[in-house]
Image 1: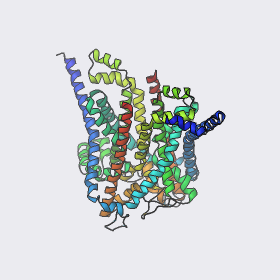
Image 2: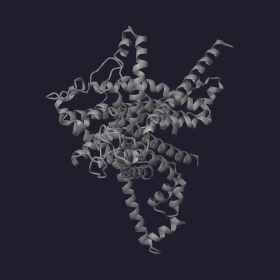
Image 3: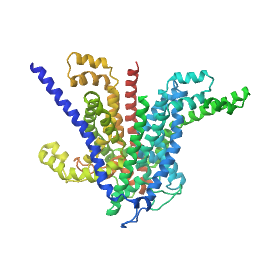
Image 4: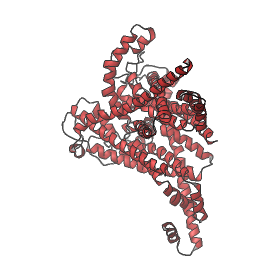
Length: 281
Length: 329
């Protein structure tokens, strides 16, 4: 064979090999992280975690009940505040302002907020909510999470509504349906699974967020449901426990980490399956 | 059917004028709800900028521009001496090393997924890579601290020191006592964290290459690598750079993972195996216990980080938008 041909072939072969190695590298990391989590976390995973509160330093009993409940409350509140705002804003971008100058500005800013460092969001809420309210609170934590939710939901809502064929809207308008009802009854229905995907992705994103909670909701050693007080939450509890010298705290941190990761990955996979169904149609 | 009867019920049976005015009111209300929600995005950005500037103002007044090139960070001194050089250095170095690792690997995976991978394997592997982006950053931090750190300190660093011992510049880069907490450990974790962003955007933009172009190149006898290098990458260059910038924006601002493993040391050391700090790690580990000028200094660090990531992300978006326009034509 011509030497140039064999050289080109060798080069191609090597680079194909490197690309496969890169893919294997990426998948290996995921596997390694999951295995470590399972190995360290499963030992401490028992009923006590869900029924007992976080223990004081040095104690060898206790669970994560207050942190789990706190995390659920703040995530639900954050998504509850952020998702409708993101949904309506996305609706404006896709339905009313398609050729608007305002739309392109908002879309651009939203894309930046989507990737903005979450610690900056924490600083913002600290300055805007914690300082005026004179204290760390669960509501500040929820607002910080809501600010993270809005761009995610806005983006998916806009994308999904733009996928709805215009013929559907035109047909509805031709029957005399006013614009708001065309959107609410036709466009939303056609894009429903996509919209749910966006909310699920946003929930997954904030469920594991730690940085914005560090100085908004802080943490709390005790069970608390008050929204104007500090509230325990899983990420910050893990953060505090894992670097402690107490073996039992460390064990709890690993179990908490396993719980969070399973939840977040399940939400992600659920969102993706729902999203795939939609594009397959 | 349900739709129709609802509307008629809402509007009352025959009163046409009433029904129309109810429609009109609903229309206007809904329009303004959505419009105000959309504008709230701008308000959030404005709020972030204003609150950071207000919080940082005392520190700006006290230190001025010298904040940028002072290395000393002594919040408990009287008066406190604060300088951003250490965290800025750490932020830039860790992100740089992370991109050095993540760009080739991320592109390699994208090429594998679009050109080489058998169809049935595409979805599982693509999903696995995207799930890497879903894992909370605190988990990466724990993993880096308990698994990667010991490995680097006990195995990898002694190995590198042995190889580069005596070599002028490289020797110093790898020198130092083994430590779990280091710039290199953080950079490696950052690389894994931004990998999915580079891969998924590259896969998306690679898909915009018209098949005819690739088929023509294969037709004249190009190998897969030649098609990728001479057709796919030139066609999608702007988009790939946009994806890389987006990943860089993430790496610059990543907080929790880095806070665990960087060691929070404000001294600048030449070795990448020495502890350091980044802007976000400094804020995360000190902010809750800070007050007065110290706190204002930390907010000023946050402002610097925000400005930095804002420009990087804005550049990324502009590049991706340019590619979208091209794909639309």
